[in-house]
Structures are given as structure tokens and as C-alpha cells.
Amino acid sequence: MTSDTDEVIRAEHISKKFGPVEALRDINLHVRKGEILGLIGDNGAGKSTLIKILTGFHQPDSGRLLFEGKESRLKSVIHARSLGIETVFQDLALVPDLPVYLNLHLNKELVHRPLPFLRRAEMKRQARKSLDRIGINIPSVTAEVGALSGGQRQAIAVARSVHSDAKLLLLDEPLAAMGAKEGGQILQLLDRLKQQGDLAIILIAHNYSQVVDVCDRVNLLQHGEITFDKPSKDTSVEELLALVHAEYRLPRTSEG
Amino acid sequence: MTERSFGTAVLQPLVRQKELSILIATVAVAIYFSATTHGFNSSDNYLTIVHYLAPWAIVAAGEVMLLICGEIDLSTGFMFTLSPFIVMSFYNGGTPLILALLLALVVCAAIGALNGFITTRFGIASFIVTLGSSFLLEGISLLMSNGAPVSAPSSGWVVSVFGKAHWSELLWVLGIVVVMQILLSATRFGVSTQATGGNPVGAAEAGIRVNLVKIVNFSIASLLAGLGGIIDGLRLGSFDPTNGGPNTMFLAVAAAVIGGTALLGGRGTVVGALLGALLLGIVFDGFSLAGVSANTFDVVLGIAIVVAMLLNVYLGYLRKRVSRA
Image (tube, rainbow over all chains, first blue to last red; front, side, top):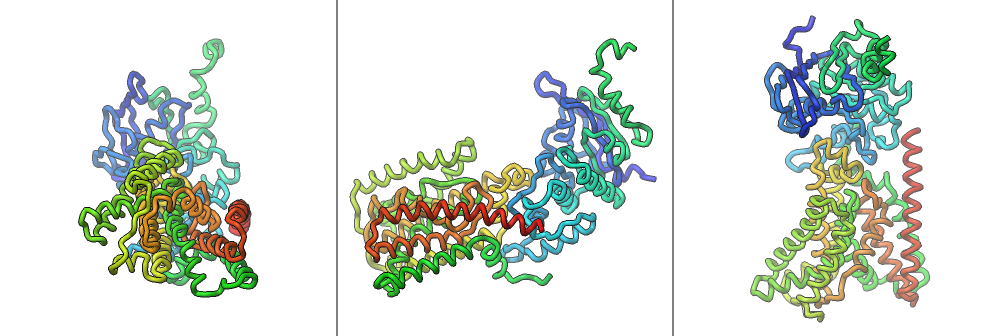
């Protein structure tokens, strides 16, 4: 169904050291358009380092990255973003004092020519269109983000990435500190984005049942290596839990 | 939704924020003084009010931008003091007055940029950095002036334009406020300034060069403070090393706060600061007409700042309720 031309990003034999610490070892990973890859692993397994390499924040010591089939050295976050790699951060890069539509256009505001004054009406219109397209329900695009709920803010953060023509969307713990209902709405949003088929998504999460529900494939990162790569339908929450916790079991239990 | 006019874009903050309440307070105070004091309603007295508020409003226009992006400049008062002496050092060296004036403004902007650079590059609180530069600039003012006033140039079109002509000071105030308000609410730089104060990490993650935004705003604040000092000095006909100082700076910050600027960054308007300065100017003038002492003015000012902050908090709460509904 999907050919290799649909592959948005592929990492081949990526390694990264910080001093003597081997953060990542021979990482191979790929995501296609319309696919959600779940990335799980314990704290310190290397998830953050991997994300920072995929977003151009760190450069790998060895190995290579292919973006849309072409080898790319991601020189910086800005470079990665110019290619269409967007990240939704845990700490939510939204400005509470600014309205929704300005947050969606943050640092990409539309201006008139030749006098560079803001095109507020056009930005509001586009913001409304963007939100409608991915089914985010906000009473008004002129509402200040600080007045919205946590789930609405997270949805706006996702919408901002999509709004800026992202091709690869990385979500770092988007469901942390969110109630079941709000978390469910975000998962539905990710599913809608997947159905639309234009985006490749990498989702980092701690909640394995959500990962199995929404992701097409799951990769497990342990001690800087990807030790597990399976379609979600071929795995289960129990299997993932068992894998992650195996190494921490008391000797007696693991022998048994 | 119709394309809203440019004017609406500039006026929008007026409606949404608390400028309306401060405007009402200002009008009420003006009515009170015109009813109770003799000579409030004369064009001479209006001019006096302008003389009071002009330094505060001009310094506040820059200070508001800094406060919005999460910083403060305590040295603007002494930049105000020092700038005329920088003009004089160029002018006495034979530079034509207009050129001396422009060069002095460049120096002021550079000093502001240096404040901003030290603040952002080394991560020192701007409160501390500009406390230091405050004393530094005061010292330089005293050294350059030998601690005594000097007469300002008193003839020529430059002198007339920069403060000497009746009402030219008012035109400067209005011009600066309009330009700064447009910069704040109708340009990308204005949005970046608000974003830098509202969520510095988030703004940086969105690719906004927050340090550069801050440095530019430090530069603008210093330049405006310097311009304010030159205009005030040329109007008075004398450059005085005791002019300006912390009093001017604190009243400018007070005007900004009374006008709705949050001290912790994120929100505020230049028009609000002008209204704050106008309110302070009217109260100051009204008190002197009524024969009330300057000490009483300070008491009123103190109360006004705290009341304005309480009002800010309350209106912020209301705004959230309204947009949630």
C-alpha cells in the first residue's frame, strides 16, 4: 500500500556519545506518511537525544538521516523546521498572553506589503480554517491561550505544527498531565491527522495502552538501542510492559 | 468576518484592556480640578501639564516595551540626564547642532544595546545591570557637566523643533506614542516582544530571537530617554545635571503600570502609559494649583500604583471569565 517514496524520515546507524556516555547506539528508524510511530522507553533510554537528533538540535556522531529519501544533515532546529520537521514540546511553546490566531502564526505572522503591518483579519481567517480542517473546537480564535484548558492548549500546539506545513511531527509526551477526556481528544486529533495522510508522526508516550491504540508501529528504546520494532496490532500492552520492566525484575522472578 | 481596518487593529487594545478605565479616571480628575482650583482651564496651564508629563510619557513609551518583553531599565532616568551633555560635547567640538543631536541619540541607543547585551549574554537580571549603569551614567553626567548646569543652544530651527516652540513637546509625545503603539500592536516585532515576555522558552522554540528582541527594546528605551532629555533641556534653555534621574524613571514606570502594563511581562500598551502619565501630570499640576505639597503628591502616587495593580489583577480575572464563557 505505501511505497518507499512515502517514507518521510529514515535514520540509519545513528550513534551519539556525550563524553564517555553512549547515548545512542546504531539506531535505525523510519516513518512513513500517514503513519504514527510510537517511541517508548524508560527515562534515560535515549528518547530525548533521539528526538533532538531528528529535530536538528544535536548532530549524530555517525550514521545518516534521510529526509524524504534524500540524505540530509540537519544543521539546526531552524533548518529542520524549514524542511517541515516540527516538534510539539512538553512545555508547550504557546504564549498565554496572545490570542489563538497569533499563537498559530507565531514568528510566521502575515504582513502587508510594502508597509509590514500585521494582517490580523487574514491570520484569523486562516487560523479558523486550520482548526476546522483538523476538527479542533475552540469558541473563538481571538481568545487568549492563557484562558483555554490544558487539552485545548495542547490541541492548539499540535495545530500550529500542522498549520506550518509540517511533514514530520514529533510529539514529546503530549498526554502528560492531561485528564482522560482531554487525552482522548488529542488521540482522536492524531488519528484524524493520520487519516488525512499527509503527515508522518512520532509519538513519545509513557501510557502504553494509548500507544497501542493510536500508533501503527511501536519502537522500544533501551540503553540507547532500539530493541523492539513491531506493528501495534502484533503487540500488546502486556508485552510492552514485560519488555520494559524485564531488566528491573528481581533476579528470582526473572529466573522463574 | 470583514477585513478590519488598520485603525481598528491599533484601537483594539484600547477596548480590550484597561485604558478605558484609566481614561475615565483621568477625565474625572481633570473635572475635579477644573471645578475646585482657579486657573486649571487655561492654555498656559495645559502647557504646564504637558511640561510635567512629557518626560514621563516619552521615557515610559520605551519602558513599556521593555516591561512587556520581561525586562526593565532603571538607567533611563540618567540617560535622560546625560544625553544633553553628549549633544554639547559634539556641538562644542564644532559639529552642527542637528548632527550633534543625532550622534547623541546613536550613543544613547548604543548604551541601551550594551545594557541589553550584558543582560541577555550573561544572564544577569536587567534590574541589576541597569542599576549599575544608572550610577555610571549619573557619574558621567556629573563629570561632563562639572556638576553645574550649562546653557543650551537657544536659536535656530533645530532648537524650535526639539522642544523650544510652544507645543512642540506635545507633538513629540504624541508622535512617539503613536509610532511605538503601532510598532507594538501592528508589527511582527511587537508580537515577538509580547511573546518574549509572555513565554520566553516558547518564543525561542518558535524561532524568535528573544535576546535580539530584548536588545533592540533596550536600545529603543535608551534612545527615547535620551531624546526626552534633549527635548526637555532645549525647552528649558538649560542642560542641568540634576534634571531627570531616578524620579523621572520611577514616574515613567509608574505611568506604565497605572496604564495597565504588567511588570512581569507579556502585556501592556504605550497608549495606556501615556494616559498614566497624563493622569499623574494632571494630579501633580492640580495639587500645585490647590497649594497641596509635593509630599502629598507622593502619597497619592503610591496609592494610585497599588490600586492600578489591583485593578489589573481583577480585570485579568474578568477577561479570563469572559473568554472561557
